Length: 604
Image (cartoon, rainbow, N blue to C red; front, side):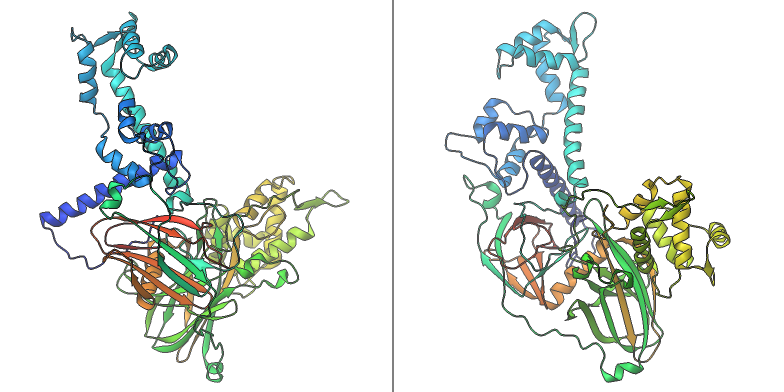
């Protein structure tokens, strides 16, 4: 998320030593648990999966930069132990500190009685194969091959210690990097993977793509999603909590949106299109907008998936993707945005908001849960043909590719005027190539492709892609790069993108909307999601804890849940949705765990 949406609560501005000390402590705790999680998930698939053997315990400890002896393993894995959980693992790491260089040198110094700084190869092999946790000759040989021996067959143990510490840090860093790169791990998606998920939508709030839940009844019940082999120190200090979330099928309050009352016929309207794009790592990016109102006015703002004219009669996966829009007021700086409201009213696939806004600048942040916009598992057999050669050997676009390009044109034509401005075309370029087209290059396009009023026509867009095919002598590789980046699969189906349209109607002035960027929602959207649930949802304290609250907001067919941690310590909440019915969850999990930092909020 990015990884979680964190909104500090009631924090006082102070420079006291006590305040600084708490911040430092929280930072150290966060780093410690990140390292614990990284090491644990290198060996196990989930933070809810238990360590089931001595060998597994030894392996996860090694991934955390420890080098446990058999004596150490036996201390934590006794004859009564059947398994250890993540909290137990964290408690062990707090007790078993990694060896320092001085400690290692001191151990070697006991062997090197002459203090020469060297140990002979034979002496080292004898010690490692006959004392303590005895190693085999092959294991010792594998170590000495990597060690720094001089020409006389002696080990420079000072260099060996440096090598050991370096390898240990590389191992820990690799685990942390994996945690950061893998979006499922980064978003705390720990638990069983559900292959066949029933219909519905669920929207927990978290970074990079916070998401919501569909189906109206959300119950919280006390429960425990696991059975530890023995009480852990983390549990005894209430550092870990567990709750069961059940999504039922009872009806919710009526949130139907009346789109066009008679009085709205005289209102002034503005519209912009946009698109959600699914990244390789599972993150969702979209256009972001700035709305300008010249005076106070009543407004109606809606967002819905965009039904592309050329796509009529074909399967349009994106029309079932849920959408939402968050409205934030811009103050003195762009960073200082204040949540105004969000599109909580619903009429079929359209979500809307009715209200009154004062004059000024507002940001509109589109959002989708990701329940219906995610990486597909369907294997495509064969590949659609993009170009062909006519009788004269001239390249031409296939009928299927032309149709896809016209769909793309409708999606990137943000103002819907049937032409592409340089600004609109550059959103397309940034998405597909990462580079922008400058005025000089645009002038070249004007000379070679059909334009009207300095904007590219549909035919000009088709011809531009044909020119690209000709530049590659018919090789479609570059064309596929464009298509794949825009959410198309090899069968020319748009499965990893969702075009949408935003409509704004104002009673007393002409609203102006402009796309500003194409990027992930980020912390602003995450905070807006959390704040919207806290402001309008129902709060319930977690049983057994006076500082942990579950905020639940129901709207139409969605449910949003946010966990608020008001304590000074981090908490791990275990959520069990195994009893949920007719619900599609964006995590793809029925059991998972989330870690909530001190004085913060995040989605469950």
